[in-house]
Image (cartoon, rainbow, N blue to C red; front, side, top):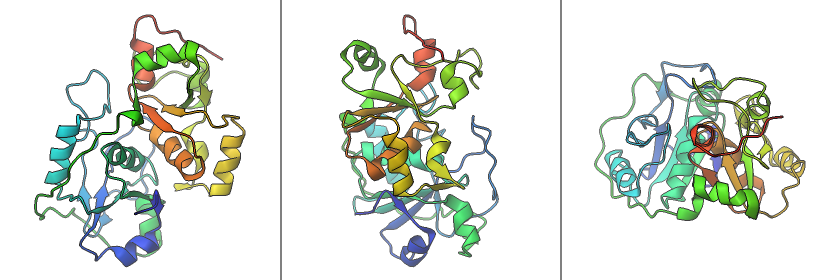
Length: 277
């Protein structure tokens, strides 16, 4: 079973194994305004996985919505992914989209999945081989989804939790957006936060595109005083929430879930309370 993150050196040693499948989750743009260091090269043998298109529910009201299990299964099979596949996901921003895809595979029951620590930049800087195009010749796989409903939280559960306090919501947006002092990147969406939620901006768990050390991550989460309560991660649209969840998975025993609608859903829904500052 793969750990949650793997290094470029590990991947380089394992790349020739037929069960190792590398997925490139890079996208042309992102709402955080991050710019890739390398844009026109890919890890040799990597297959492109379309996060914004084929791997997000295009019929959903909000962006980055998780696919139904049957559709995820079909798309994963078209990428040549099998039940025995060791899936390694990377992107060209260090760790960004890759964490979302890692989480999605785990939600669908495929636990043998990892994020490439440092992403494409780390791979290039360590001198490993790249090519100009993605691998596109492979057989249809036999991937079978086994959806884990406990991994995803919905708005009604978050509303109920305002009184029940059964879990703690951790928001991965910037402090300004969380406090309501900075605008949201999506037009028409007000800033602020879900009452009783805590703020941990996703970039606080990263350093130069790498996940921070386990020791540093333990200190970060210790400062939040969350103890052993279940944690639900949120952000603007469910994407960077998965980065903070990835960090938590490394060092915490807590039950971890994602509020998939995240702030975009909460702020645009009638009757949902919003706190500021």
